[in-house]
Image (cartoon, rainbow over all chains, first blue to last red; front, side, top):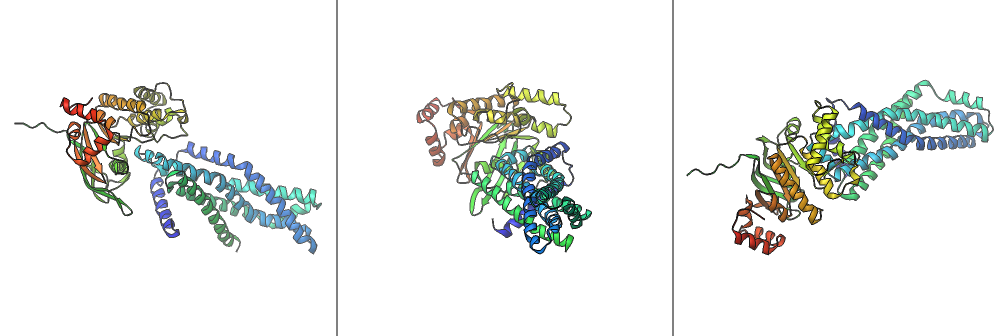
Amino acid sequence: MSFVAGIGRFCIFLAAFFRATIRRPPHPGMVLAEAYRIGVKSLPVLVIIAAFVGTNLALQGYNAFAPLGGQRLVGMFVSTAGIREMAPVIAAAMIAAKAGTEMASHIAVMRIREQIDALEVMAVDPMWYLILPRLLGIVLVLPALTIIAIFTTLCSAYLVTVWQLGLNGAVFLEFARQGIQGVDFIYCMTKGLVFGIIIALVSCFFGFEAGRGPEGVGRATNGAVVTVSVAVVFLNYFLSELFYG
Amino acid sequence: MDRPTAPPAVIELEGVSKSFDDTRVLDDISLAIPAGQTTAIIGASGTGKSVLIKHVIGLLRPDVGCVRVFGQDVATASKAQLYALRRRMGMLFQDGALFDSLTVGQNVGFPLEHHRKDLDEAQRGHLVEEKLEWVGLPGIADRSIASLSGGQRKRVGLARAIIMEPEIILFDEPNSGLDPLTSDAIDELIIDMKRRLGITFVVISHDIVGTVKVADHIGMLYEGRLVEFGPTHQILRSSNPVVMNFLRRNLDTSWLAALNAAGTEGVP
């Protein structure tokens, strides 16, 4: 679909979603099941990637500041870049890659196998049944996963800084503390919240719009992950500008 | 002389046309489907049969014309009205459209779970088991959908379609993708359900042999137009060349000759 037509269809999809869900509360059990599934499935890979982002931030920070005699600034560099920018984007990317693609492909398969039509025929709104629990599940866990990504990044950077680069741990922590403020955690969780909403709605939209056959499922999944990735880095810039600009 | 009273129509289509892009799929269809009987819509693949049935259930809205179910215009109904109508209807999809993540029992009980909050779990379980028994699959409520054969999927889909005790059941290609023996078994099941429930059945099919067995009335779609509609025995003797050609291609000619020679209204 063309970009403009796609935006138009997404707006129609959003309007239908809000109409379908505004007056009907979600099923708590389904929301918790989604939150658990998304959180638990994504956690291991998130921790691994966040850990290695932390190690590399420490190494590159050290390489950048050491020639100027500013090795002690590594902690500040890691906390500023890692916490404010990298951790929310990494957490969102992991959720988009794991949960977002799963949402898009699952709903696309339901679409081509007429299961969404079956929901309609049984007078169960697919927007309420399929999308609302996924949206709320992801909104519940992504801020928490973002905080986990922050601490993982910091911990791995600390370990590399102390064990590999031989800098003082207390100095690292002191400069890391100077690089961030309490409000940064609020900003990061807000980013997680916004990214979660985007991941769920865009992924479900692509699933709903899937064309026929296996090719339709593939396109929906691919389209969802590409669109979500672009949307996340795009929004990250504007949110950073809003919070820190 | 008094003419026999025709059963009232529960589904009426008036001048329904539908196009996708530049392709006209339904072209000025007018049709009245009588209550309490089995009406089959036949035609080759791609003639708009599934599109027609999707108009009846409100999954598609006509570009032109009107679709009334129980006297309610489906095209102009609000979502709440449409859902209220659908609770009085059931539908068997081509592949069953069962939810893979749920067990057989959860699939069959799905409409109860959402619309019959007055029933407790034990009552719902009892109804699920009863309907599975009706379709010849007792004791499989705990099985996964992946473990079912094509014929079993259709049976489970039918159990789900009847669990809310609907007044109309729509069958979308009930024989598609099945071997002849399983296909016969599904036809027998439809006849059994018709006897048991006495409600309105609408069957979409390109399988004329099965259709003749189950249908009281047949309508033939050709290139989006309804070329013939009437009682089954009348359609089998139709002089319409399109109908004749379709029957000849799909029925054994000796079977047709025997039917004509017998001169009966019934079918083998």
